[in-house]
Image 1 (cartoon, rainbow, N blue to C red):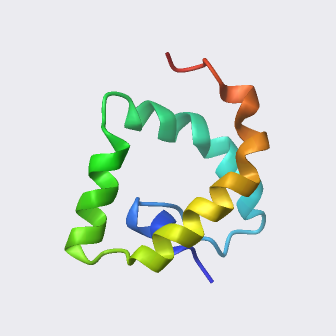
Image 2 (cartoon, rainbow, N blue to C red):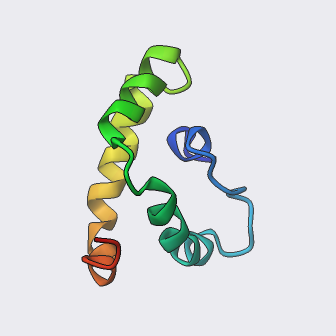
Length: 79
């Protein structure tokens, strides 16, 4: 099942042959698109519009915490 938060943020089709590899390859582009944007404001807008629920946000945050080690290689890349 696709992550609702990822879909709401315009994510790619999760049915791809290797979704984790696609995610890793697309992450730098995502970071570039996010440059100068306030992610907390974006999340608030998604919640208030009903595009995502608090439960889905909580699940996405838990997944992000579990995957945080993967992102170490990108630290400082987009500053």
